Image (tube, rainbow, N blue to C red; front, side, top):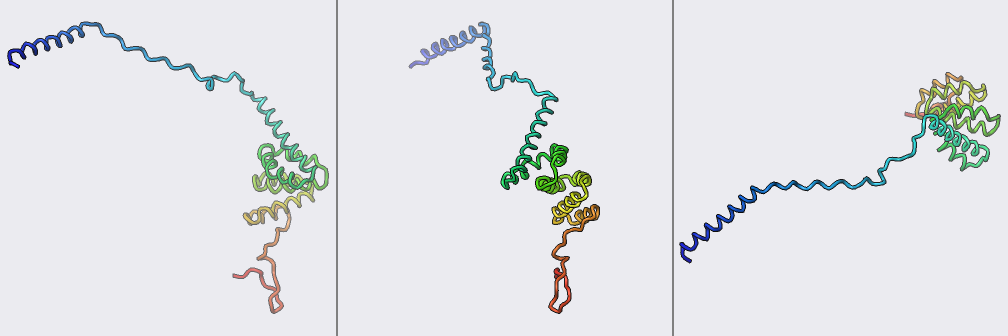
Length: 200
């Protein structure tokens, strides 16, 4: 192809491209399309129409719950079933001591002398002295003399292994002899005399 035939072709092409850009520049800019609106809220997040319980209602719900705990313990004591009692003393009594100790005390006071009262007193003493020693000691001091000494012995025996010093103080405070440890028990030697059970 000759050069003279190429030049006019190039000129025509450049003129066409320039005209296209010129026309495009004169046209008004089209606005970008608006963003798609968000979908409607899911029913899962729809605000609840239920009214939150008020202070009085919360107090009443707690009272009813604690009453159920007390009833469960009372049934376990009356039935004298070992499994039922173990469940009540393991799961129910600790919660009641924590959230409403006054109810536990009132429950104790409502029981007359007998096996049920002795069993509950022992369990309350053992669990309360481990959870709140000061409160447990104050309660123990309100008991009649015989029950006070029995509770003191229960408390001392339950803490001696891990808190021997506290057990000694409690023993002196209630005038109860602490349980004897194996190292404190003398035993006969081969020569007929006494020697300590503890050997270095």
